[in-house]
Image 1 (cartoon, one colour):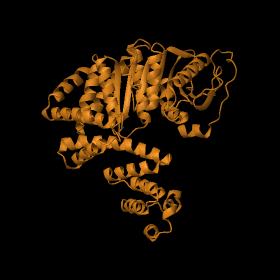
Image 2: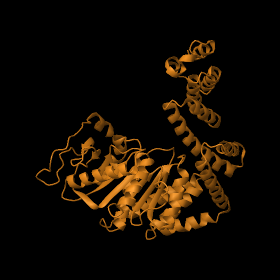
Image 3: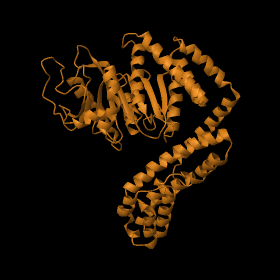
Length: 448
């Protein structure tokens, strides 16, 4: 359905005032509206989704999303399917992105919130925030600034607002991140913070790195917000929906346990027991969580998790400093040569660090910081031994630095690892200094 919206995208200019029905929107329903300009402050705008049933005679919950790169339509598209099913308005400020002063985020959030409140029929008790990475930090900062305005936060790939390790008591939280996200340790810290503060929350992980969660997890986030709203008497009770959610999660935990992910299964059992003590799945989950927690093998896993959690936090704090590289090499050695349990945790930590290195290296390449890019891609090429992308990018940086031998060595490694893009090899501007060399011509012949 989202592909149809893209083809119909138009910039909808807001009409002055409301229609005669009071809150009937001068915008299409059931499709993505790329830009709505704030009526009172035209400096700010937002992407919008209105469910097809809007404006039925009711107030509507609204989700305010913040993307770290200002990709409003992309962020919006992740939630539209669930928003249509569950009856949410979704709003994504277009001007919000990483790197702005804190005061600017406050201005954007306030302008967009006030415009949406005036223009649409929203449920003032059910306004929620969501964000990914830096957008998640903005979302939590908005919640800390206006704790009575919002009812919950969906945090993806990050949680805490800078050095402020706090979250409003009255809100519910949905945490989700990739299993190789470089903010993995922060999300685990957030989990412990919310448990200790007895907050209402749910946590999920998906296979992948530092990015927005797939649509099914965004849908689960709205499902959990509805569940929390029922618990808080903001929606009518629905015991059947609560039972269905808890049973689905119990079956997911069983699946994790069967597949060998017993630690993650235990966490999910604990969450089910914590959130659903009154449901049939709650006591069952609590019993199984207790059994797993005293299992000798799982005790070893818990010790390793704690050790690698501490090590991961050290690596995060000293990332790219002189002490970082020998420590990371030690973890990589354990990943390839260590005993089975330690090797698994070491591989997970190396994956997290490689995700951070890739992001930094890519930024250096885009910013033409060739020396730093060459160094980072050299490290990545050694850590990710099957990747042909890292040596390819390393060759580009080395060529820009005039290091022809190093660049050619990187290109040879990229081809050995399966790089086969002849057109890129022939046309990449970064490699211009190599094209007349016999060694480069020989590499071209290999691909023809």
